Image 1 (cartoon, rainbow, N blue to C red):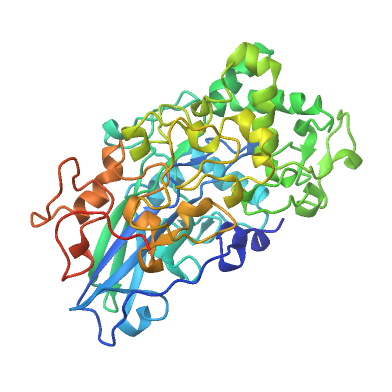
Image 2: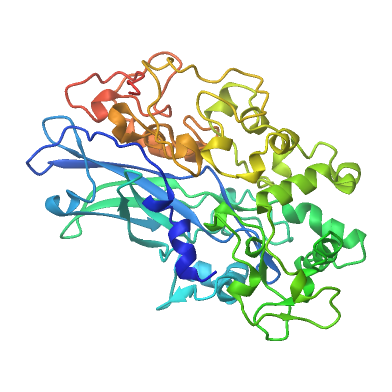
Length: 497
């Protein structure tokens, strides 16, 4: 698949999502006297591969979103693409920890720079001396307003776990034996006027970690006579893949015809919504002149597009493999951190974890339940994901979900085709995003990690604000006067309708 076909889907444009029309907050005809901005990462954790010479599961690809409010003497107005120009403001972002110098000097990220054009034909990972992500955004730039999602977005920024000068931040272990890394780089978001003066700013965590695959697969390679390296793992995985009904040992695939195998992208054959796909493109459509190297036990006639999604084959294999269950983890169906992402990093660290013993499987179901319910055949679809009021089909939660009338009425979400009802949901006059007040999915406020709570602590940290017993400034945005100058300064639960 050519990059120009891939990027619109990765960017989650209006054509890719279904939304409910939302009324705007009260408008005004005069220019706001001040502004406020709240930002978040779309997910509580993204993953990216540490090496790219063999195959790609996930590229560097984080998305930062924000809502901007303009203030005067009345209720705020949401700043969008229709009035930003009128008021003379721009919304921009800049990563605070990843820099051009550190990314381009990072030996792992250098592999991305080298191999990305083979994985995504037409993509240029460094342009004009600056790193850019698959959607064209770099580590800094202007955000664009998505009229469908009702927020400002910087899609696909190339965030990457880094070896931080502040060693206390380097909590992620490197599965390949390198130095520990910081999986929680920060991104600053700014509202500026035409002169470049900062009118409002905030910071949000842009989480990205290495997945946990290497933790098992390096030892798996070694146990079968291969080097305990990423290359050895790729070689043995190819051999194993060749033993299934496809017969494809991907070590013998030379996409570009340069005489070397790989790199390959799993979603060329197994469609993956995380790659912006609703159907697998097929290797022949991506690299029409690909070569099968000498010694292969298959022909081009065998290189077909699979009917199964990448999520389906990956999860179903691990939960049903006798070797996995007997030699590595008998409870792999419930031990999500074996892969997501592992390496001493917490994907799931939000308020649900702090308040209860909820685990991933309570909301999503374990792998056996997800397979039985057919969820993995349509991964990331709203129909297969949990909502605030119900767990995913097939799940057996240990705790009750939120009732529809817990917060002064039912939640008023959008109904997107991808990524669920919380991430793209809106409430409170149908205009405020769920994540604006509650934080990123899987890191909802108050998070068990202090860094996640920094933004809300800053927003609700005024000494004039008061909080009831058991609540504090790290809780979901609930001080009414923060947005409405005539309302209360005591934290409470605002209407969600």
